[in-house]
Length: 524
Image (cartoon, rainbow, N blue to C red; front, side):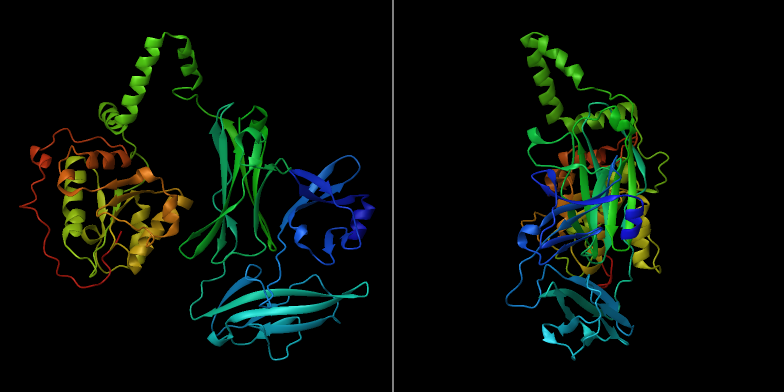
């Protein structure tokens, strides 16, 4: 590698970010630059930060790669730091090798293996081989190497958490969610680009996600709006949905310029195995229906006109739901045409032995379809009613969620069960990651503590929750049904509405007694 750079007359420089600026790293007795390697003898806490390496031919500088180095303090009560280990999940009965990852390549260096901080069978090889893994092999393995440098001895360790399971998840490849895309925008508009990477079933230590703009890296967002650069990237965030891990990073563009329309905004997901990229381009979209600058002309109008405008705004905000529903009826708007979906919503509710009453089941099987289907023309998918028995339940759930435009969750303190949690997580994955299905939460009974729900549920907008207030919510024209229709896709309403729905007389159409067992029917 060194000869190739020299023949091409390239210069390699290392930089560390300091106060938002790149500072050239000068070699010392402790920090040594070996072309495409930067060595610390030893590393100190102050070495933490963002590093990049550039290649220069005397005319242009090219940034080759960037890293984030996090130096952790040694744990005096243990042989490893819990924040500095990798996790490997393997199947019992298979063969596997643990590798002592280190820059040291000297075969004479002393190597010692530890399991749970105890010397492991006097093993001194660079790789720890297991011909047949068992559950007992699970543990935390630490490899310790003694390295000699300029007459001094240094310790280098790497720690691996080995988890042996009877049925471990298969190995997956890191990938960026979604394909290259073009985003419609307008000159002068603020734009936020999102990139999400799938990490697998655990968080790899060496994975990083970042943006580049025409092969240059943007500045970091400071969090202070008036001091933000025109384009900056936020810190990446980790998401845990079910047993899968994701990482996401936002790129903020304060005001889109004409120059931005010709740039390539590239999201890069990088680990030891390689780099995956996703390119996002901006293009001019159609002019907005109500451009913001049109409202600024109203400032020169008389005070009376301003007062009228304020009143109109207050009315629009207060009666937003009613106005939207009225607009849908007048224009006969239909958001369902041609989208390839079969159902308007998939209904999830608790139908299990833990249910304390029949009210929740009556609401899901009787009241909800009576109003939404018979009165407003929606088509619901209720697992117990619409899915033929005998199929694979998990596959059926996944298939019918895919066929539905919305996912309605009738939520109560007793909602969560092993199978209901699968449905909830499937819906959250499609709402937060794939962005294919929108979730509507119906709080059927008051819930004081939401800790029993998945943490990722907090990422849903709060306005997508409607509360059922028993008799007060029964009439068709109640606020509950208006809010629910507002969250459902726009669809032409039936022209003839039967008067009996206004009072919802359920006496003759009550739910039938439940005679089933405790099998999985708490389906979405």
